[in-house]
Amino acid sequence: MPRRGHLTTAVAGAALLLGAVSHPAVSQTDHDGRRVLVFSKTAGFRHDSIPAGIAAVRQLGERGGFTVEATEDASAFTPANLRRYDAVVFLSTTGDVLDAVQQTAFERYIRHGGGYVGVHAAADTEYDWAFYGGVVGAYFQSHPAIQQAQINVEDRAHPATSRLPLTWERTDEWYNYRSNPRDRAHVLASLDESSYTGGTMNGDHPIAWCQNYRGGRAFYTGVGHTVESYAEPAVLDHLWGGIRWAIGDTQADCRPENGYRPLFDGTAASLDGWKQAGPGSFTLGDDGTLTSSGGMGLLWYADRSFGGYSLKLDWRASGASGDDNSGVFVGFPPSNDPWSAVNNGYEIQIDATDVPEKTTGSVYGFQSADLDKRDRALNPPGEWNTYEIRVEGERLRVWLNGVKINDFTNTDPARSLRDGHLGIQNHGAGDQVSFRNVRIKELPVRGN
Image 1 (cartoon, rainbow, N blue to C red):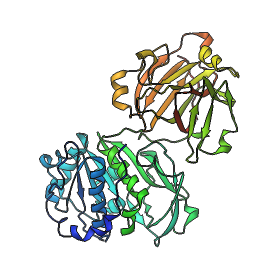
Image 2: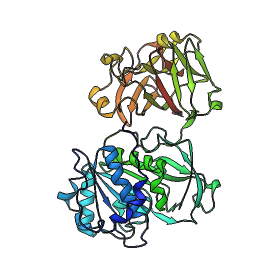
Image 3: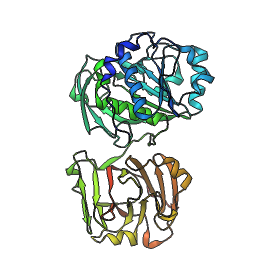
Image 4: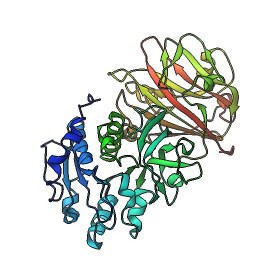
């Protein structure tokens, strides 16, 4: 992953941009590859942080290797011009900023795989354009005074939030929204309404989310009202990850997620129901991450077994070569012998360098993943991935970063999936794989 750049010059350089943002888009840096358009036209309230935001996104382009262009000229919204960009950043736009022809061009852009990034007042934009309301996810309703609040990071794997702490305290202008996007978008972070005054969303207050929308990718964050925001390293990490996902440089599961409960939430207390079988162990880091060491052993959830369920967890292979070995075991009987899980359950493998039936996404030793889909969905070593492992009856399906890569049906009565335990593997002394945010949603047990 590229080293974090020195971005505190964003505010100092803002004045130099005041005359540039009203002109048609002009390339500022000649990068090969990805290209991002920052659009900051306002027809309502104008944020004085816009120049600082543009300066910050330009420097994020230097950090991430993508070209950044900026404009407030809506005539840039033509089919031919928008095709030049991998994402369009709506940076605190307000009011009606595009006419009907320009709106049609943007809709076509999204439907053909374009990326959208909405920052702060992007939610205070185009109230009468239903497509835009869908892509931004929720419209602005009101806000209290600028104050400090606590953000709870719900998704620990998405690049926009993977570098943030579990709880993130900062000062900003906190928007209330006209609707809750949770049922149609994937919530990345939410506000703790008890940590500040003026929240009106009844305790469920998303503040950043992502979604796959009508063929494109859409990311929105409510942060970024103040000039000072764009000199905060955590805010810049947050924006950088959102842009990287929107332009397709990294993968994540942005399907709506509801009804899950944690089995491991990053705290030591949530490990009370788990047991270590065999040699080796897992270390709990200050960032709420479990990292394997030694082996071959298994950290398994001993409190109870499960039948039908959707199990989600985030994982990261640490080695640069990508050959770290681990896996997620399902459907095995309780035992302090890790080989019992091997012999009586199924392993969803983590090791991208092995043979097809033993590589990442495979049902180890039984069925390969769809390797073309797997390769497109898989993030490289050092970056987080998300598995969904769904068991219904004897059917076992695997999603990697929101893409279904395996569909396997058990026919061996000795390995029945209808009732069993779950676990994560520590494979060997040279293998270092980390896990976060293990959660489960129970499903009806169905026959196959």
